[in-house]
Amino acid sequence: MKKTALFIAMTLVALCCRAQAVAPDNEGMTLNAQEWTRNVVMGWNLGNSLECPKTETEWGNPKTTQAMIKAVADKGFNSIRIPVRWINHVNNTTEMAVNPEWLARVKEVVDWALAENMYVIINSHHEDWYDRNPYYSKQEENNRKLGALWTSIATYFRDYGERLIFAGTNEITVNWSAPSTEQQKVQNSYNQTFVDAVRNTGGKNYYRNLVVQTFACSPYHGLNGFTIPNDKVEGRLSVEFHYYDPYDYCGNCTYYYWGEAYKDKGSIITNSTESTITNLFDRIFNTWMKQGLGVVMGEYGVSNHFTNDDKQTQMENMQYYLKCVVGEARKHGFAAFAWDNNQFNNGSENFGIFKRWQNMEVGNIYFLNGITEGSATEYEEPQGHEGEEEVEGATFWEGNSILDWGNGLQLTIPGSQFEGKGNNVPLSLSYTQEYNDYDDIQLFFGDWSAQVKFTVGNQSFTGDFIPSNYYFTGSGTSHVTTMAFTEATLNTILQRGVVIQGHGIRLKKVTIGTPTGITAVTIDDTMANTPIYTIEGKRVERTLPGHLYVKKGKKFIAK
Image 1 (cartoon, rainbow, N blue to C red):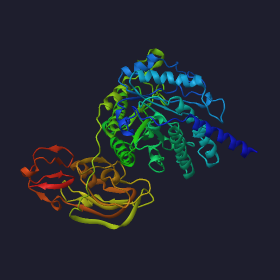
Image 2: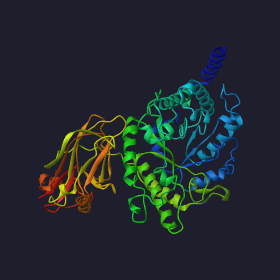
Image 3: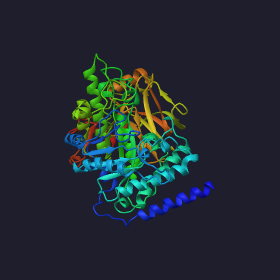
């Protein structure tokens, strides 16, 4: 009897959905996903408002007004993400039709944003019935309800233009732990249900840009488990992740300084630097944007935190962090939306930018300045690199071993191996990319005190080098990567040695070279238009005989 009732209910929903569908309408729907995301210069979240459990003001924020949205736009934000909770405004969980009053309220806020020429995202946020239940036992029921919910929402907004897009879910998770295969598959099924439901309503929704999510909106879980949904149209999907990394700086607030630029100010967190953001965003670009997806960083931020003895420096550091995050997002073509929950205390969960109770006065100018500075960065499509030839020198190690952090090879090279080889001695690694999730080569000083700075070609790295990002290649590809060091770094290596470890790499050979093992080149007029860099990555107009340089990703000694 129960199965029969469920079948009838599902049939009614299916018939309702088909009745609501109209013919596809592509008028004015010209932007693809990557064009849409690149158009987001500064994005802002209307946090802790429409996603409250019952009423918009339940979590202490005032009711959103048109003046609030205008104030945000006046400060340079040209995009808004509006988190929305729907389930408390649904009377019948079989039909999942949203109450007209709530739809009208969401529409009102959307219209205010569009009146300011903003790009707008509305999503399904804090829906505990599905986002805390990514299990096979709930999969069929939740997909039915999610499909019916998005049919209701999408039908209501079907005639809206391309500036409005939909995001299917939010942070689906179980205790914020790494997902099981089951949980990943259920999340992927939610994404597919959302896309199908919206497309099936027809009209402009057939061509509307849509956003699907990684598990917990984690970039790391997404890079190892996210499946791109099938879509009826090409190039109209974006993938969403959130970025509050490193969490001990941004969320837990146990560190007060971040980044190489601030390491002389106090104790900085060591597992994240400027290059960490660059390397991760490179990998995201190569994984998703190379497949035609847009990328939405739906939330990011750092919670306001400081000590009284160095508050000014710490506030400037948070500004610098936001500048770096937004700048890298813009450079990679990601749409970045700052989380603002209207909280301004000292410690965790204080992401406020605008004081909503005080006529949208800027409550944290450092946050606003950092976002504004980063947003000035222009999009740059990353360029690939060719592999290098192995340098001449002494073979330190040769074999066939996997790098897998503590479970694989951790190769220690004593500092004595670098003695007498000059100030520009390179380290050459021969290896194959061999991974199911991601690859990374990491260099630490031999006492594990810090990550090693080095250059590959004309790019600088601190500790982590990700071959798939640098070469734009996948698992099974072989490379020779030559790493060069500054004189100061080499002096530290001489004292402490260097450790090579990583993940997803099958190491074959390690060679410690000498500058004399690199080709000597005479610079002539035919090379005038070829950029030449010092080993530290600084471009030069002329070379000095006997010095080491980089041209087209390869090192040479100038004659």
